Image 1: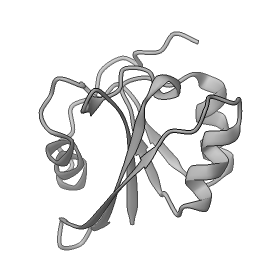
Image 2 (image 1 turned 135 degrees about the horizontal axis):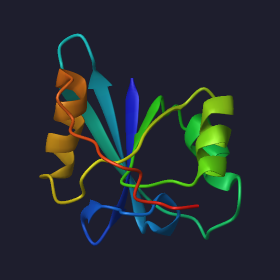
Image 3 (image 1 turned 30 degrees about the horizontal axis):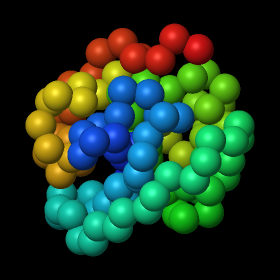
Image 4 (image 1 turned 90 degrees about the vertical axis):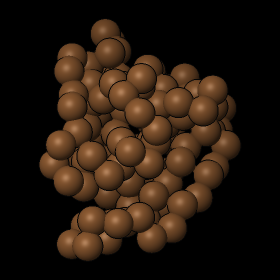
Length: 114
């Protein structure tokens, strides 16, 4: 399983479409551990590009602070689960991934209003 997090200034990004980088975590959900990490610079913002690109990279889950409804729909159409409302101040990126794997990720309101 591969999980993607949008990152800005080293933290989970409040707004998915404004991130600087993507951190990818290949995980073993049964063993609940991170196997491999990868970082990619975010491409210039282009509507519809990121759901297709991340799907092509084998991403199964995106965890974000906020994401617009259209992007969420496009991810769903590409078979990628979206988790919004993750707290960017809630710990390290790895802790966010581990909390998701352990079923303890705290989420609130989607931090994106469009």
